[in-house]
Amino acid sequence: MNDKLYHWAEMRAKMRLMGFSAHAVKPLNEDAAAELGAELLGEATIFVVACGCLVLEYWRHQAQRRREEREWRAAWDAMRDEVDHLALALEALQDRVQAAPLQSAVVELQAQMREVRAQLCVRDPPSAPQATPKE
Image 1 (cartoon, one colour):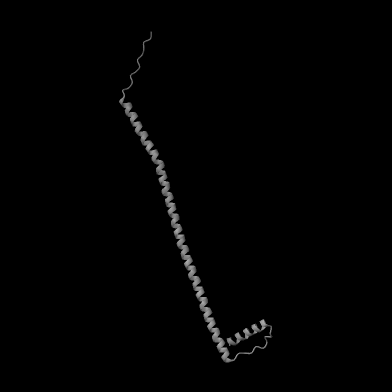
Image 2 (tube, rainbow, N blue to C red):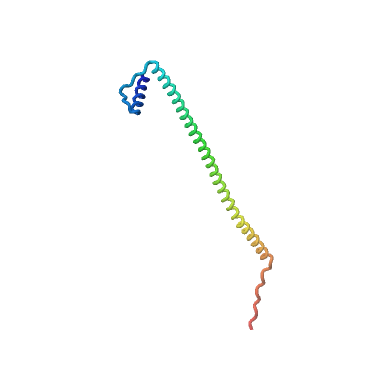
């Protein structure tokens, strides 16, 4: 039944495209209809399998692209975290470098103060100025 309907629609479309009257389309005999049906079924099977392969390949490609994007983002995030960690380490080192001269300067000043105190303690206290008699 579908073969006859297909043949009728196909022949009407062809005849109209060529400019003929499409009113009188002769029906197919049983053998021709069976052959046309087998041909249509084969072509439909091939078409469905090809479309299925295309859809599966598209899904596979999209899944691979998403996986690669996730890996790229993970690598990017890891690099960003490493850069942040290195920035913090650099700040800590800069603080230590800036603090080191100050600490050594403080230690040096403390040593100088001890020397001055030691020198002051070693010296004899100055004698009191003697009063000069007034005349």
